[in-house]
Amino acid sequence: MAKKKRQGHYCRICGEYKANEKFSGKGHAQHICKACMSKKNKGGEIDTEIPVADEDFDDELFGDMEYDMFNPDIDIMPSVEPEHKKYDKLNKEEKAALKELWADIVIRYWEDERLIPFGEPYSKIKRELLEIFAEQGEIALKDDNNLKVFLHDTMIATINKVLKRNASI
Image (tube, rainbow, N blue to C red; front, side, top):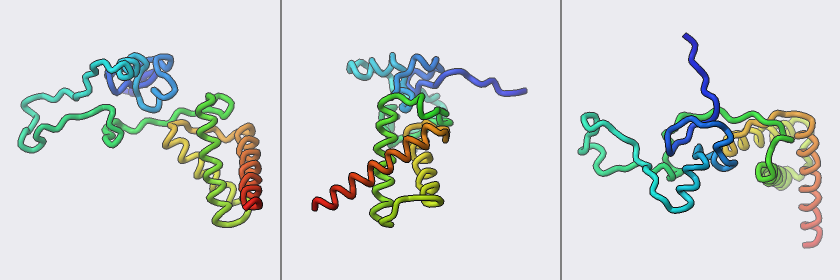
């Protein structure tokens, strides 16, 4: 029997699957719905402990260990497939994060090679960008023409800024 695919996203606080509209931009990435996020921001009490059956819990082995849902060092959630988006569908914050990440990668390449990435090196650093963005931002960007234009324009502007900064020194 085929597994039923659920619509929306999973909230790691309340443990429910909710519609995409119930999550803010940061909430998607953190897997926290708007309702739980507002409780967290207001300083309200949120039950962040994972219920464990008493007969399965070994106090000698685990002691007084508690699970904190807001601790980024703990990752027990199954990996989530990144959301697929076109560049045009990114919000302002996502575009700014993409631009900053791309500028950092281009500057690093420029400082290492003293060349403008073209051909295979360009493809390699673009792949690196898309992998990092999918991992950190949980958004898999579609490699369309608008993304190519954005990356090219940002790359040229970034290298020009580096050259002007170095010329003034």
